[in-house]
Amino acid sequence: MQFDASVLAPTRSNFLKHDGPAGLVVFLVALPLCLGVAHASGAPLFAGIIAGIVGGCLISILSGSQISVSGPAAGLVVIVITAIQTLGSYQAFLVAVVLCGVIQIVMGILGAGAIGDYVPNSVIKGMLAGIGLVIVLKQIPHALGHDLDWIGDLSFLEAGNMNTLSAIFADAAPILGGPLLISVLSLIILVVWEKLASGGARFFGVVPGSLAVVALGIIVNHVFQIVAPALYISDPQHLVELPVAQSFQDLTHQFTIPDFSAIADSNVWSISLTLAIVASIESLLSLEAADRIDPYRRISPPSRELWAQGAGNVVSGFLGGLPVTSVVLRTSANVYAGGRTWMAAFVHGFLLLASALLIPQLLNQIPLACLAAILIMVGYKLTKPDMYQSVYRLGMTQFIPFLVTVMAIVFTDLLKGVLLGLACGLFFVLRSNHRDAVTVVSRGNACLIRLNKDTTFINKSELRTKLRAIERGTDVLIDGTKASYIDRDILEVVEDFRKMADHQDITVELKHIAGKILGPET
Image (cartoon, rainbow, N blue to C red):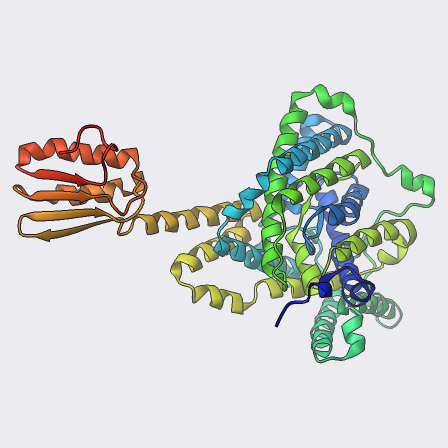
């Protein structure tokens, strides 16, 4: 059956049925994440909203990805905190954000996006599963009503000498009834809603379950206020906290202008380069992950993504926003909400803008327990047991790097987890390349040593071991026919063996290695 590409075009039908509702779901997820990243970074809260708006309304148009969603990233929090402290002001830091964007644009033009192609599939799958597991673990305290950590944090270590696991056990005893009831009810609604939607019920297929959960959370909390005051959630710590502007003038005051006099500071340039490298890596990894979970298996152009992210950072920095990257969490929410084209990401950015202008008071009534339930569902879909089983069936060379990536992300953070997964994957590549690179066949006093594939310094130990095992008086043929490339280290090992052979009554003949050693063939 031939695939109809028009199904994925940004048409009115797609918008109403898929992209619009998906954009609404991503907006509900992204709103507290934008605020949380800004708060954790020590930046103005509105800076997170600006970054989310730019990521949705600008990068979605420029990027070649149909489902990737960009915004302020948790992985940059530590860099942002340190940079603001180093430069002495947020205005000076904004200059670094603008320069970061310029560097990314240059990287994209030069084709640096190809870096993402070197990440093994097992590590990408491990990244998705690891992030999903972290999301679930991180949202349990919020579902219990303990919002000491910001809702979008994905790092293992938390404030107050806590970590992802200890926070769960610490919160297990003092459970707050209101948030717990709302989160449990929200999870039930999300599961039932999804089943009804997949069963063909039109209403449940058009209206997002996440919207129903948020609306119900607001209503139930107000009912608690009347009939069960002890369950009522009134503490702003347990609710969305969007900055409220009383007038348009108040809103304009929330924008911050970069202080370009700081451009002469060498620290600004080093910070901008650091931001560009880390943000680019996160974006490319997220793009790879997005293509992996895209139900239509579309392939996004990575270099275009880099300059699109760069343009977003230039604009975000000029407006006073945080640096932006493509973000796996928002992208996953988009995919699982049914988003098909870039319009879903655009809608999420537009809704962030509209909410900041029109309905901040209403949004500030949303319990974080509702959003925690939505994120738990997103996290579960990323780390389903089926994924672990499917990778396990591929063999240990795939499963071990996958599992190392998952565990490293849970116990460190995204970038460190991916780097450890890459190191593990590289080990298996080297191990595979090392195995059976050299074979030895002996018959009487004749010995054939065959180089079976490209041989490099990795195979030096194996070759030396087999050469040392050759007995005196043996006629040796070293055959390089099957090796299209022979490393200089291997050639030196062969030459050393030739020089030693004269003293061991060993004759050495070389085949298809002419001109590749340190002396004439014998």
